[in-house]
Image (cartoon, rainbow, N blue to C red; front, side, top):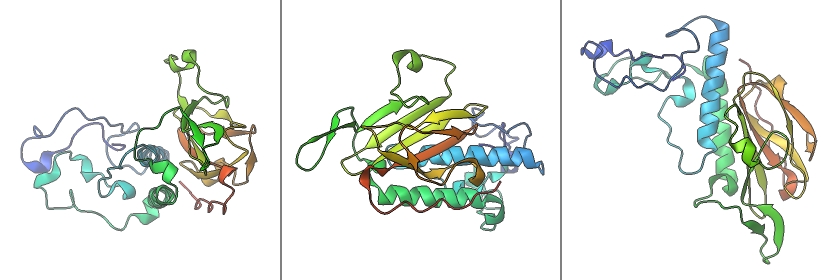
Length: 250
C-alpha cells in the first residue's frame, strides 16, 4: 500500500489481468522497491500512521501477517496461488522495519492494558461517572481541533482540514488520539480541565526527536510534525507512568 500504485501480478501467469485494479495505495513517487532514503522514510512513516490508525480504532483490528514488518508481496494483490517469495514472510526485516514492529507491539500492549482504548460497544457523548454515580464533567468520547477545544460545526465542514483529535475516557483514565495528515507541522494545544489535568505522550508515529518525552500541563502546546499520529495519555488516572516509547530512527 505504500510501495506500489499498480498491481504486479505477472507471476500468476494471467497476464496481469487477475486481481483488482482498484488499489487504494500510494507509491510515494516511485513504483516498487528503491534505495532512495527519503522515499523509504516517507513510506515507513505512512505505514506507521496506518498501523496506528487501525490499532487505535474501535472494534477488533484486522492485521494481515507481515503488515508489521514491511511485507509488500512485490506488488501482487492476488497472491493466493503463490508459494514463493511473493507470498512468504521475510522474518529478517527488523533492521529496516524495526520502527514498525516496535510501534505495533507498543500499541497492542496499550490496547491490552487500557480498556478505554478497546471499548466493546459504541461510545456516546454522555458524561462519564464514577462508581458512586457522580458525574466527572467529561465525556466518553469527544472530538477536538488542534486548538484544544471541541470541534465546531464549521470545522467539521472544512474540506481543507487535515487534523482531528479523538478524546476517549472512562472513570479511571483518558487518552487523546491526534491524527495530523497535513504536509507541514501544526501546533497542538492540549485540552485542559475537565478533560485532563496533564498529559504525556504514550506513543507516536514520528521520529524520537520530534516530540517531547516529558509530562506536560493541560493547556500547554506541542508541535506535531507533518503526517503524524500522536497518542496522548491523560494523568487523570494517576497510576504508574506509561513506559517511554522505544527510540525510533528512520
